[in-house]
Image 1 (cartoon, one colour):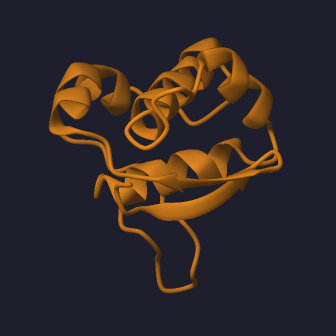
Image 2 (cartoon, one colour; image 1 turned 90 degrees about the vertical axis):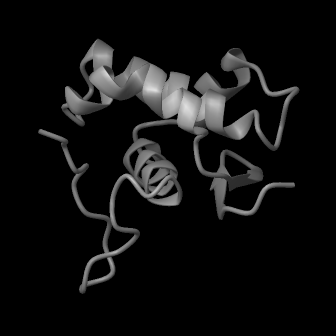
Length: 105
């Protein structure tokens, strides 16, 4: 098991590992355009990166299962945990909350 952030999605606790450099490279353009809303592109990015990350520890996980476990109540926290583990954002700010995704220029 790759070390990471423990988080419940639905009734299952997962360990969210960092993304691989290959995944970050593949999704770099989409990450830099991430809006953080409920638009199709943002939701798709959260699901695709979430699956890529979680499959490092749970190779049997399917997109269909993940789509049922990530909801509007946990989508933002899940994505921020994934980005924090990957060091694409600071894990926490001074007040203890996740910060916005850092965009490269």
